[in-house]
Image (cartoon, rainbow, N blue to C red; front, top):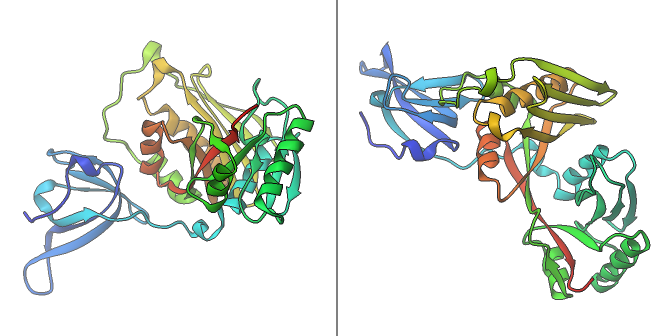
Amino acid sequence: MGRHLLGPHVVGQRVVVRHVVRGETGPTGGPALNDVLGICRSWSTGPDGIVVIDADLGPVSVPVADIVSGKPVPPRPSVRHRDSPREVELHTHVLWPDLVAEPLGEWVLRCAPAYDGRLRRRANSALAMGDPGLPLADASAAVQAWHRERDREPMVMAVAGSGEESGLLDLGWRDLGSGSAHCQVAGVAKALRACNAPSPEPRTPPVGGGADVTARDSEEGGRLVVALGDGTATGRATLDGDWVVLDGVAVDADHRRQGLATRVLAELLDWAASQGARTAMLQVETDNPGAVRLYEGLGFVTHHTYRYLVTATP
């Protein structure tokens, strides 16, 4: 009906759509118009047209023929974007009960034993965000000495493009080359609504009947583990105040594209909401675009991106 910048390419993006409201008359006698703003869940030339997940209305379907105008718009900033990357990252410390964390000014020196059978980079790297309270060269030396005293490879975690990262690179540190990730945040209520919204996207038929049983276990204090079926899809949620940290969301290769990751997230977020959590956060590696699209489609937005740096020589 109108000219717009919409199409299949906007799936997963935040869009605004002005459309005709069928059966209603506007104040000037013409057709009534309405606007919908949210994440585009799907695009089709069929009856559903564009499906937008509106924060207040939930999923809204607009036939393509009823679109008057529309375009992608920047993601809505989370209220938690006012928190610094350092403040957000400190919430992840609840993931490791045996974490040793010592301050170096605003930096945090971290070391922890293996978690789920392997050492975690986040728990065994210095959080190099903020002012270390001493010259950068001295802070660099302190990190290296502290880690080596604990039989760990010296490693720092810094915001990509930050002054801390640039300064450490100038001192001879180098990008590890793997593990770089986006820290994403979302309102718990909004993400839960998006998880529970019907998905019009085609999914691969379940293998062997799929995973149709949800099991909750290890619900101890502020932590919940969720498994679907016999463990084909799993995930964890850990509370830190009114934040919930989501991690370990995984689906067996033979059971992907069946919506299982979304079901796991829905269970985790539902539990978190019942415990009073208002903000959810998770980490998704930058080389996993499929997961990035999934989380963005559920309302998560990138708060910051971090990289790991190691010394040039062991």
